Length: 433
Picture 1 (cartoon, rainbow, N blue to C red):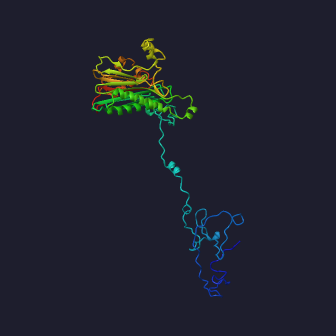
Picture 2: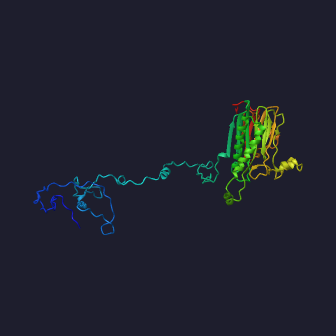
């Protein structure tokens, strides 16, 4: 075991390396002043290495002529006991002892790798507040939209929708029996090239037996509405514009079925998305309607003494039976096959046959565009006229809400969507009071 050399008595002269005696002030051989203590080497941080000589660690060999590093015993260092009190006999370490007690903390001397920014972002992102159930007001809502406490399904954005655009307004509701709203609508207003106003409404009903019916109705209503609002200001005749809008809607629905073949292999039970469509364009003196399927358009005059009228014919089994003279209308619509549609938008439709018609009413009134979720509770034109509020032309949004409420009060067995357009189209800027 090596012993610690004393700085006050050097075994050899630092100048000529001749032996010296303890207490000598000068070297007897060369006269070197032994009282001058050499400066300690420049301090460097010391890395802790686990291991000891002979345990397999390759220790560096000192360079020839280099001075051996100073060795310190534990007793040479000041310390504290378990109560943080200075130990007896410990003294402050003199300057230049070769040991630093004020060196920076370890992390500053040996910086670690920078943290992963992805982890930092995850930690820094604030947590979203938990959604509380609207039914029990206590349970948390899971990612599927159901309460973890009572199991109640939470309202979705499409469960109830309302929109007003100038003189036209529409309301859509999920109803009381369906788990989602598969209806969709588009409303808007514009001007013809001569500056006369025009109002547009499109209502679509997703076919529940098809795949993604809600996506089909949304795509169809959006495509048809955009096509009408783009074509009318260019001077396209409203009836031609309606036909082109229905074709555009059909193409949008067909595009939903364009999925990789592998998707069909993994889900062979899926079929093409599908929906029905009905729309109306109202100008200062012309009313144009178009449809495919069993959604309808009704004409209700302001003068309720004048007759109301249904302006569309259903693409349905019941309508075919009546048209062929095989059944009366009452018998056909009482049959369980009555609502089986014979025309729809979708990649699996037999053939696209858009129906369009134009009218020139001789008096003011309102146009009601709706799905069967409403007309099931007001099927005839007379029944529809009775439930439309008298001030519908001045308050189309309020009237649409009343009509949806009528269907919900009747049982709400289906999704309910209705749009109300005043005729003739009022000047730009007019709307619900």
